[in-house]
Image (cartoon, rainbow, N blue to C red; front, side, top):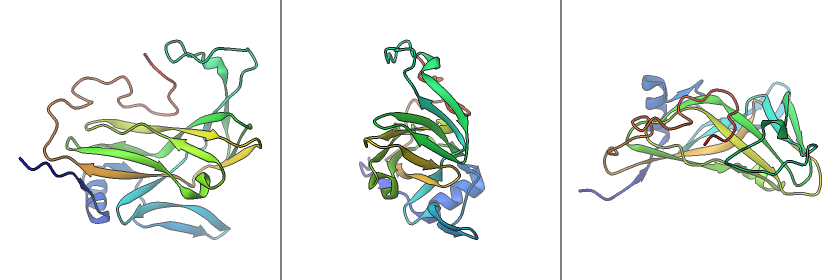
Length: 192
């Protein structure tokens, strides 16, 4: 048995996206600028894919003095906004989603890392691994670690996904066990 796990290249990502719908919509090259000026890059890179954040945001607010409980999360702890630019309050966070819909192959695990443009501003992007067989829009958590309001730009790059191929297909995939976040669309709150 080969115990090696490989990070997959732009060639493999492109092939899976175009032939098997692994990423939709798919941008075949790094996009850095548009006609109106600079943007935060997105699209295919050498060994990953930089996904965009959609224009749907759930911004955390605690006007009702709620307790954050992952087993009983209060949906009214968020204010919904559809906007081109989300402002996250100081020391707070917002949930968003990727523009792209992902379908993860059975022998692949996907890891997400934040983009340096945001990280260097004190904005952290957190995403749990995309498991083999999972599909959906990826819910993104943006944490503003600064004492100042922070901006997130919709339809621009937010994070990079790295594709790791296992030594063999898994025995039980996320789809096989009917995971609770399977096929999610839009920004998805915690589920138990």
